[in-house]
Each structure stands twice: as structure tokens, then as C-alpha cells.
Amino acid sequence: MKKIHLLALAAVALFAAACSQPVKEVRSATTQAIKVDTTLDAIQDEAYIEYLAPTRAELDKIMDVQLGYAPQDMWVGSPECPMLNWATDALWEAAKKVYPGTVDIAIVNMGGMRCSWVKGPITRGDVFDLMPFENELVVLTLKGCDVIDLCESFARYGAQGVAGMRVTIIDGKLADVTVAGKAVNPKADYTIATSDYLSGGTDHMTALTRAVDCWKSEQKIRDLYEQAVLEQDTLRVALDGRMTIKP
Image (cartoon, rainbow, N blue to C red; front, side):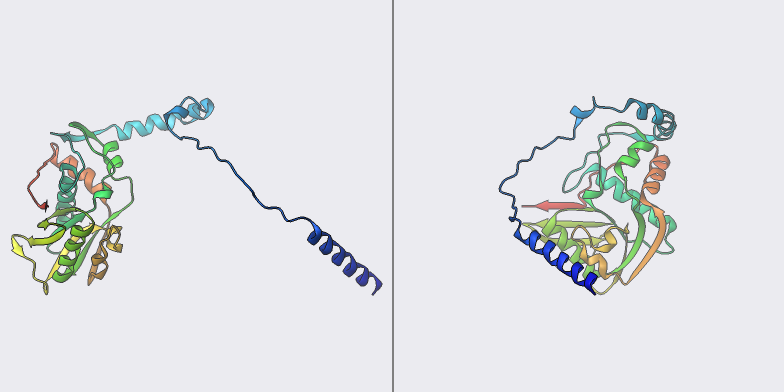
């Protein structure tokens, strides 16, 4: 018992000593920004670079393979651009080949275009630069009213890539939307090829979350783009007024 009392007294004494210490607080702090850019290229681990050299050489052999040719600069911009139109058309055509039904529309987000391509040869590495993500193709079935709501989000938040439809936005409001040359029927069903990423309603596309059906291809969009470049050889690029924004 005496030992227990002594331990208790010791604990109380330590607690009291801790409480008697002055409270410390931060009165000021200074920071320094360190840029992570090309100025750091001179600082290299030569041994590690040498270790990676064989792997990099093998990877370069794979990534430097030419798949096709761009007849013009494939720039990215709003409301319509060569890269976005090509990518959306390529996804639409790929979906038609694998989906067991009609694919009415394709949607690709502007933010998903991670690079531009300059006029000239297109390599496998260029395709990886464009689509570095593991996104997969899905085909969603939406009611026409939700397709209209989706296009209204384009009017509010900015243009996105479309294929199979034409969208006109005037003064920040949706003025017209057609699919296959016909006005969208709010009660009809429409199938939309897009990415599993966008199917979650990202990039303000919440209308996609109201899909009545979601068909999963389990195919990476990057692989579909690579196949499209191979098949086309010389890329088919067009600006055709499918997404029009007027003041």
C-alpha cells in the first residue's frame, strides 16, 4: 500500500510541475518558397539516373512508336477546338463498336484534355500525355430532360466536348440542343458514351448521375484513343459548329 501511495504522490508531483511550466506560444513565423522548376534540374542523383537508364531506354522504345499523323495543330480551347472534337468523335466511334445498341451522343470534358498536339507525327507517348488517367468508357442511358439539364450546365459553367449533338448557348443560357438533327424529346431515352469519371457527376455534370442505366466497357479510354489514331493514320479533324456560344 505504501508503494501505491508513493507512486500516486509522485504522479501528482510530476503533474504539478508540468502545470507550473510557463505556457509557450508561437509569436511569429517566417517561411520561404522553394520553386520546383527547371532550375532544380542541375541537382541530380547521377547514380540513380544511371540505374534507371536501361528501363528508360526500353520505355522510350515503346512510347516513341509513331501511331499516326496530325494534319494540323490540335489545340485545346473553348467553345470548340480540334483536340476536343477529335477526342469526342473518337470516343463516340469506339463506343459504337462495342456497345450492344445505338450510341446517340458522346461527352468529353475540356479538363480531360491534358495536352495539345502539334502538326506532325503522333506517338504512343503523345496519347499518354493526352490521357494519363485510367478512365474507362461507359455508356449511360439518360432521359431527354436530363440531357437538356446537362447542356444547361454547359451554359452555366463552360463548354465541353460533344459528338452526335449540337448545342447553342446565347447570353449564358441554353438556346437550342439537337441530337441527330432533331430537338431533344424530354421523355425519350438517349445513350451517352463518356468516361466513368464523368459518370460520377464531376465537372458540374450532375445530370449524368441520374442515368437510368450504366453499361461498363472495362476498356481504357487511352487505349481507345490509341486505336483511333492507328486506324485513322491521318487524323480526321473538323470544327463544325457543334458547340456554339454567342454573347
